[in-house]
Length: 88
Figure 1 (cartoon, rainbow, N blue to C red):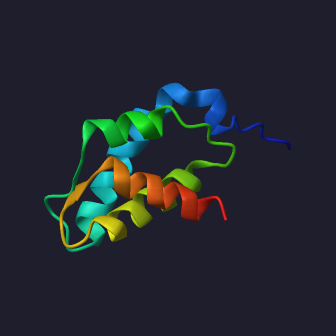
Figure 2: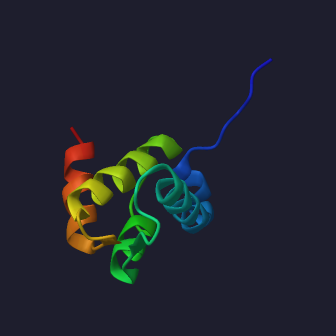
């Protein structure tokens, strides 16, 4: 049985919800209960082409959080650095 899973590029309308979900996961799994993302960073992520699956977005958000520490606010600069690292 073949299951056709659309790529994130085909489901861009889901990206805002995925960002919110992954931030919630990071808040609970890491010592970051007040973790948030600046609107500019969120917009940047929503406008990216995501050829991979949702784990690519999750990894960028995790790396952006690591770039933001000790702050708990993910800024555009943190996301840009994480995106470059995620490209290989």
